Length: 458
Image (cartoon, rainbow, N blue to C red; front, side, top):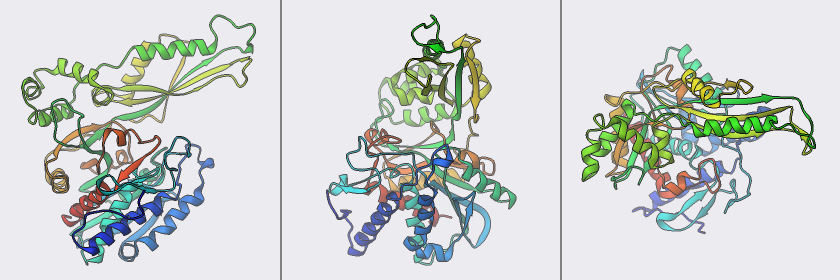
């Protein structure tokens, strides 16, 4: 473990600036802004402390940009440009999923700096999802304000406080912008990243930029039945019936299919493969069905790219070990693919389960979001900024597998892109919402550079 930041800067002032940026990231990671679906369990004092800390860390930004608190704790900053039209929105969220120290190599809210050189990392909940991006945005804006830069058009910073639960804060910000007649010409939120070894035959780093995202719905499976003592159980208890429903649903996967965005991704990446794979990928539309089947079997990530997915995440039954449950319940987290819908998903679930005694309901249903274009000035700016920050990287559109606050912004903008400007290994991606989340210092600093390039072009 090291107490200093090794950044390889050519000038001492650059090294000091990088060290300060990492220190500010650590300070904000140490504030445990954990959001919970039951907001009565949320420690709002931590959110208040986070908001109150920002002006002291970024004084130039707060002297220049106006700030509004929306829906209790979400933040909307406005950086006035020379003209108000064609506004840009840079998004992130500062809430994190709950974490305890169990299983972590370094406690999740200690923001421990580990390693040396290129492998040096900050460990902690939120480093990747999503305080790392939020701090990178703040660092970029602070630096640009400090040199007297004024954007040509307004730039907004939208920082949600409950993205990990309902996204109500971001939705309220969109309502506010809509009421003022603001239609952003570019929105950038978390999403894809710079990754490697995710596509067969491609050895170069790939920057996957979300031009859309899957719909998300919690489907509840409920079985209501008479209870009683566990010593005299019927053959089909509520839990057995529920278990059968789950196994039936698990056995009947949603069909794999390729969307227009899938085709564009395959064709883009196919140009960088060799041999027979290149021949197939460059003719993706001709090999539609076999390619969908192939990607559906290659791995969990590629499978999720081409189909609706369903994962049982919560189970409940009796309150006592010796009592038969009067109600057994499962929650299924469903991510709905482009080209499908909440209604089509529910039809599939009902056909798979085939049991009228299992009550199936959709909670907080969200359809797949609209697809943003991969041509035009907004898209090209994102591509140019990535290529300048990460030379030699292939930039491709994709459908984001998770949900983000940006889905709300499709109500006011046609140009919503989802990209976290960090290089993430497969091991690092596996820490999202899991133990040992961490970001390398070098990629965090590269993220700042990405946002500086975007800002400079606006």
